Amino acid sequence: MDRIIALVDASQYAASVCEHAAWIAQRTGAPVELLHVIGRRQGGAPQDLSGSIRLGARTALLEELAALDAQRARVVNAQGRAILDDARALAEAAGAGSVTTRLLQGDLVETVAGLQDQTRVVVIGKRGEAADFATAHLGSNVERVVRISQRPVLVASRAFRPIGRVLVAFDGGASARRAVAAMAESALYRGLALHLVSVGATDDGRQRQMDEAAAQLRGAGLQVETRQIEGQPETVLARLVETEGFDMLVMGAYGHSRIRSLMVGSTTTEMVRSCKVPVLLFR
Image 1 (spheres, helix red, strand yellow):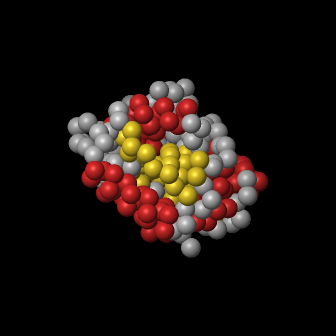
Image 2 (cartoon, helix red, strand yellow):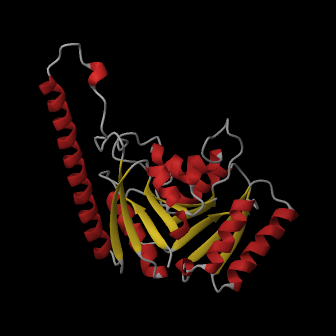
Image 3 (cartoon, rainbow, N blue to C red):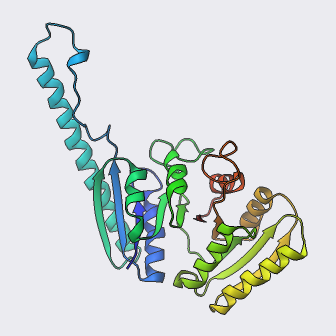
């Protein structure tokens, strides 16, 4: 069975990542794998320090530097294991049935890419441990993970809350259609109130696409309402989430140009950045 990969670190989002992963696990029966990746620099990779030491430096100095590197690596690995132990306790307490942990060293994005064949969904916090203070920005790993992931990515909000009402942003594009198809096939959305919303100029073509998407979801036994609303997507979607009490936003991660956005479309970036609820992205 495909795993739920939950990326955990020492940030304030780690508990929320565990709880959102447990929520998915409870509804789908999928196992959770908690993953902590130690960056190559953090892990104390061997370095050739001889070029930075002046001629005549004692061999003991090089040995001392090497010992410090080894000590730092042991501390970082111990911290990683402690993070995973805490995360496992949180996930199990939140109701996850099968939880495993993995501590790896390397590049986070490369690691996630290599695990995609056995991954159902990736869960990541909106910001990492080094970016908790930067509330107006996304964590750099979020952008990188979403860009490479061929699986849905759930960007967890700071705190978990029960999910009952789901706003589904639908623009008729390929990623939005893939999102609808995946939702129709997943047990995750059973019993949830889905609201399929199209933002922008109203026309018959978009309404037809909306009707087809709604029929696909209803055909799978899901509850869904549809709406077309004029306006700017960033403004309208944010207002709906805030004023109508939605618990999660689902949308396609669609790109417009590499110049405008390296990760995804500008609307997607803004919604992930500003929304106080989890955002589930489909490529």
